[in-house]
Image (cartoon, rainbow over all chains, first blue to last red; front, side, top):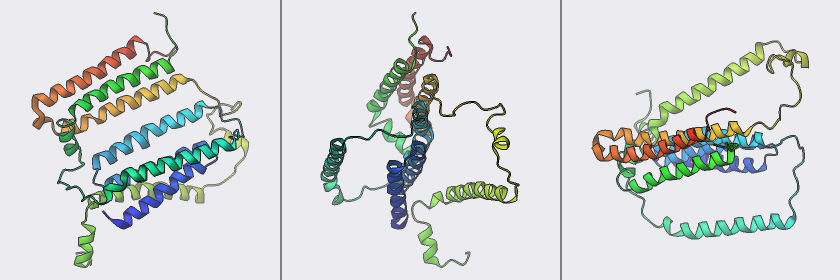
Length: 165
Length: 132
């Protein structure tokens, strides 16, 4: 892995993620989030996950961000002020965030000592991903389509006026 | 070879360098857009008044606020687009291995698409594509 590229991408990812949180205007938050997703795509390329990089670009930076913009525009943006959350809620949010950080750090601790995985020629390409997906992970792949059906049904139930038939 | 010392060429050939053409294309695309924007700002006359800019709004005299909450029906279309978009992505790893997988891979994909078609039929029955 190229350390300079990794460093630049990491700085870009973290700073754009922080800008998502600190932007006052929700539309600017979404735009920063797009930059964040682009830099995460760069991380995937550095990790040799080429297919995942393209998918991340198409689905997240392309489609999911449009949905985010939709949701923001569905909200009423005419109100200038945001209601202030009480202090105890803010403290609870900070505390739960720190706890999540501890859990993540503890669960990832062992991985640093492990030897890096051996990367073959077609690792991470569409061909390589397909070979694994359609042999070792065939059942999760089929179950994913059931997950999609639940998503379709859920979106219709939430977003469609019920027609009496 | 372009005056590069041997070691520098080797550094450029490390992993990830197959993305160099893509990077050049991206730089060119962004550079072109930025250049056009800057040049039009520099050479174009600037007379910004409410009357002048109004015609760029939509051609019709603008009324009220642009920040109007719109119908959820658009959102339904958008989220269905995303779902089928993700479905199509699963075709790429399948299509590149189509010959190797043979019949077994075909059946696996058939089940996947059949379940999706079930959802598609459900959408038709629920009239999710009609605009009422």
